[in-house]
Amino acid sequence: MVLASVAAVAAIAFVGAVDTTLAAATNEIDAELEASYNRLMGDLMSPYCPGRTIKNCPSYQATLLRERIRESLESGQTEEAVLAALLDEFGDGMLGRPRFSGFGLVAWLTPLVVLVGGGWGVTAFLRRQSSRAAAAPETEFTPPDEEGQRLEAILETELAALDPKLGILNP
Image (cartoon, rainbow, N blue to C red; front, side, top):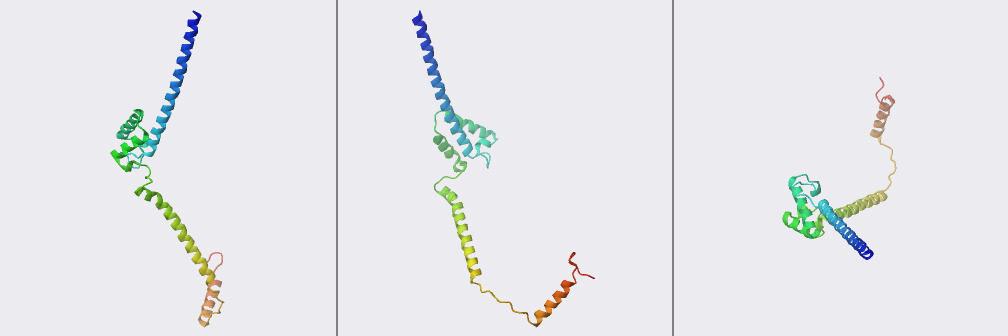
C-alpha cells in the first residue's frame, strides 16, 4: 500500500515535470512566433494602405492578411518563407526598406554619395575662398578726387541735418 502511494506520487511528479517542460517549450515557441510575426508586421508595407505598414493599416483586407501571416507562421512556415510568398504575391513594394542588392543598393548608397560629395564640394569652396582672400593684395587708401570731395561734402551736410533719434531731417 505504501509502495503504491510512493509510486503514485512519483508518477504525478514525473507528469508535472514533463508538463512544465512542455509548457516552457510551448512558451518559447510562442515567443519566437510572436517575435517573427511582429517583425513582419513592422517591416512590411500594406498593399492596401499606401504609406502604412501592415500593422497600422485599418482596412479589412489588411486584417485578413495579418491573420493569414499568423496562420502561416503557426503552421510552421519560416519567416523567410512567409516573406517570400508575400513578395511573390504583392511585389517588392511591400518592403519597408529596399534590399541590399540591385536597384535597392542604389537607394542605400545615394545618400552616402551625396553627403560625401557635398562635404567635398563645401571643403573645396571654402579652401578656394580662403586662398583668394589670402592672395588678394591689400589696397592703400587713396583720397577722393574733386567729384568725390564734392559728394562727401553733400553727404556730410545731409547727415548733419538728420535728427539722430528719429532718423529724419530737421526742419
